[in-house]
Image 1 (cartoon, rainbow, N blue to C red):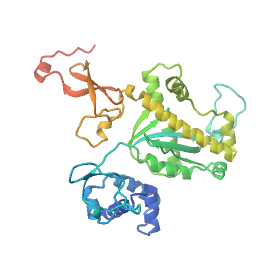
Image 2: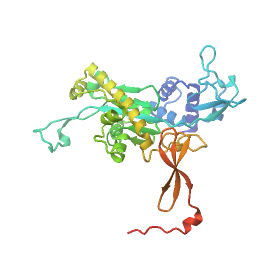
Image 3: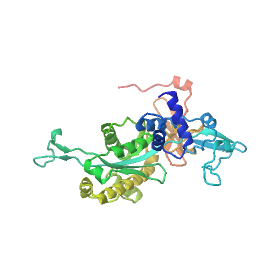
Image 4: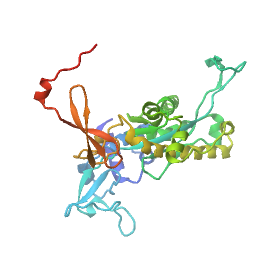
Length: 365
């Protein structure tokens, strides 16, 4: 990416804070600002948004305040200002209309995600549990009916599903493009059985539809957490939600997938609501399990703070448990997060360097 293109996209991001990355790309192409593809502009915009710094914003005098990218603090008394800044007519105030100190805000983007896919249709000569079905027996391969997703704690559920015409054609390119823009923003993606199903399926459809690889992310799979750390009678999302939250999934039958395949509009609409409900339920299950998740992606590396934060939830208040976490050669104090209840350890060792020099290490057998 050239510096000229980088500066151009940065200018559009700052001057159009109300637009998402797809809309930024739309506007740039409408203005004839560049000949780059829509897909490339979306991808670059999502990257450059993280690079915008205070000096860049201040240089663009008169630009609307990009509330999604920065924190604003009153320079006189250090108090946070209300966001967004609006004038009497409801328009965004501009940087030259008030005196503020601008600092970068880094908040982890945690995406709850679910997809729905169509059946594979194959030709067989008989039924059987271990019948071999080869690639040449595939009549119609699977594709994606749609997806739903939400940012953690955000009330809005995003979704995109195929139209009846797209379902007939088994064409999911449009919805894959919209999903790409969302997935590309995520720091952490939360799914249920997503490591084996959702994410490989998504990558496959992105690849087959000619989309670029998306940005790196960390994963939390509540199905994997359930199988590894618990002994539930069933590890399905529905069962865990029932016993832990007294909630359950929207009911469906096999016939719904058949009707969607036949492009019945009502069936496609019901499938969409089913997927949306799953995402909301998955968020609740994730939050219930989160304190128990060992090896949760460390929120501490994703936030802008000089203080210790809980690796699981980002909370900053802790209580010492009075217990000690030990390795073969070290020991650390354990603390409990006052926000989510997760048990973690401090980084400061309880054993001095001199003590460690005199320590024996168990022999390997």
